Length: 112
Image 1 (tube, rainbow, N blue to C red):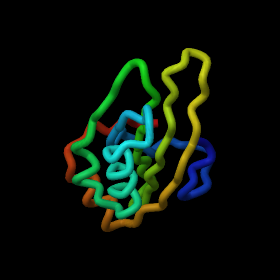
Image 2: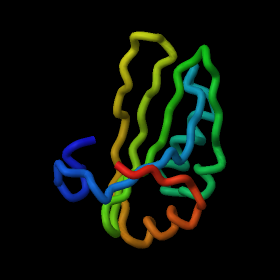
Image 3: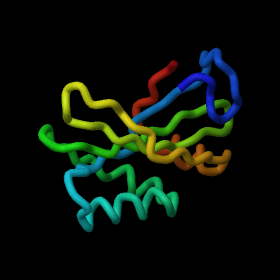
Image 4: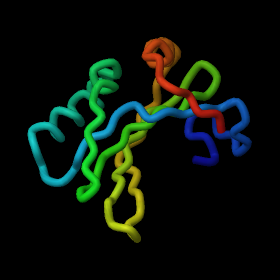
């Protein structure tokens, strides 16, 4: 994602990202609705416990990108079709307090 949706810089040195959660998006299920409810309510710790995947179905992936003391969470539709394209579903800015909460989840941060 360049430029960074948080700071606007095109040079992403010092930025990092991680996969927070994933959910099968085969149909409109109660699980998928609950997944999006957690995302919209910014219940990051609960959301981070969901790691559902099925190789024959679309998935919704939630990533977090960190930029200095701020960041953003974004939901992406990941199609199972070989030639399908990812689709950005939502982008949510997160502040310093939430960044601290997300860093405490012990997730593997990938540098850009």
